[in-house]
Amino acid sequence: MLTCNKERIQNKIETFSTFGDAGHGGITRFSLSEEALNARTEFVKRMREVGVETVTDDMANMYATLHGTEANLPSIVMASHCDSVRNGGNYDGILGVITAMEVVETIATEKIPHRHPITAMIWTNEEGSLYAPAMMSSGVVCGKFEKAKMLASKSPEGKTFGEALKQSGYVGDEANRLTPKDYMAMLELHIEQGPVLEAEKKQIGVVEGVVGMVNYRIRTYGQSDHAGTTPMPYRKDALLAAASALKYLHAELDKLDSDLVYTTGEILCHPCVHTVIPDFVDFSLDARHQNPEVIKQVVKIIKNMPKEFDKCEVKYEEAWARSTIEFNEELVSLVQKSADAYGYTSKRMYSGAGHDAQYVANLMPTTMIFVPSKDGHSHCEPEFTSVDECLRGINVVLQTVLEIDKN
Image (tube, rainbow, N blue to C red; front, side, top):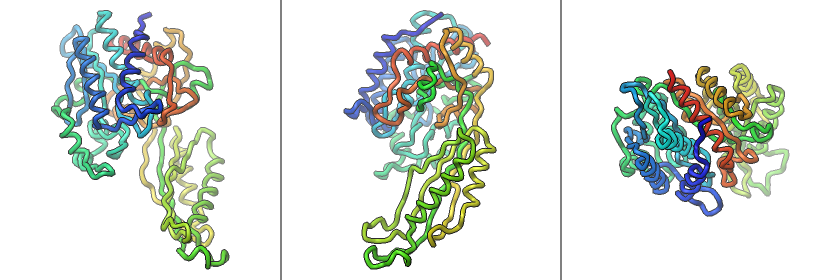
């Protein structure tokens, strides 16, 4: 079986970890920041060293294409992102880019025959850490977002994404965009970002799709009064009501399918003064499951919860939602075939996190490959996947690309 180069992979991981090194084992590398531009420069340099030139599109997405032996055939693309969250790890996103680079380099240096062009790609602003929303550029390319609105997205400092894009030096031609005419399939390798593969001692995650989700805002309305002079029976404490609402939702949601996951990750409290009873609380509820019927049950529970807790009015509003995305069955089967050919243990699974691949899946045949995350950590500095685990995943991508190339 063909295999990629472990030492080269380790070198790539170590090199890219210097771009945005936060000093504690992880990185802060916001999209189009100086650190991200340095990572892009490294990508261009390494691709040029193996004889591959890089072009960009109007959203600064990057495409490095190794030509095939047959002219006019569509390309096979491997893509991910090089930006990170604040104090993130050295594997989320960038490992998919390293994978694409390593597969291209292996095919080029080993002179492996291939009919189709093979493209290594970087998506711009997947995380949305400075410029919301996440998966911005893949959303524009795949028709999910309006470009003008995305260009107007502002960082907390007030800089627009459009301004950052112009200053980056990586704005190219819209004609270079990923299209189903020029590309026949996309693969994205990613760390699992969860504990399942490691816990079940599986080496490869064969990803069948991305789970559906809903995100709601729950709001409670009380009355602000002095914390020292208002007797307890007279209070309308919006924070207490929010706690009661959250406990109620947990109790009801726990009665649903055990694979349902839900999170409250953001809470806004007004006036947020230690001597004042809160009069308003707004908290998020993020719920995810593969089965759309379970998501419908989640929404029903939210809509049917009591309209009052602790003498405070309770309201809800849907912030956004997404349907479950199913990846291309043929590509999923090829990933499984490739993992089996190497003798790697594997698990069929769905991604609970969002990825650029979920948007591309509506544009062309797409799938993902997962490798284990140590202790399930991701979006934090302890994020880690051993080079041996990375090598296995990259080998599966290499073999899958060569299988696709036969078509």
